[in-house]
Image (tube, rainbow, N blue to C red):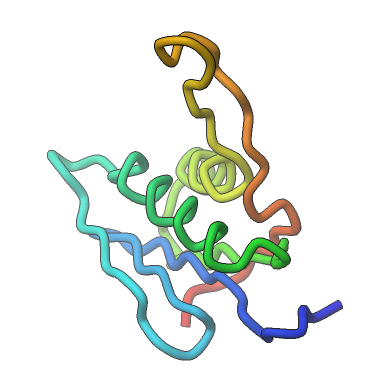
Length: 108
């Protein structure tokens, strides 16, 4: 069911970069670093989007045709949850759910 804000996260995995949109407007472009997808930056961005839209659970991960399945799984994991260090001196890792309802499709 769509949330009241109508906000949704779309992560588009392209050959040389990852784009994050809200379904209509581009939010960010995260280029590959040293030939690898920059999942850390993506994770930080997705976490901040979740903070802005705490009631939204839906996200789409959209792939260009030649993207390896492995990358799909890594990106989905990042969109679905993150791990943050909490507790005294930040010593306890805690899983934080982000956008858990993920649909997968082809990149526009």
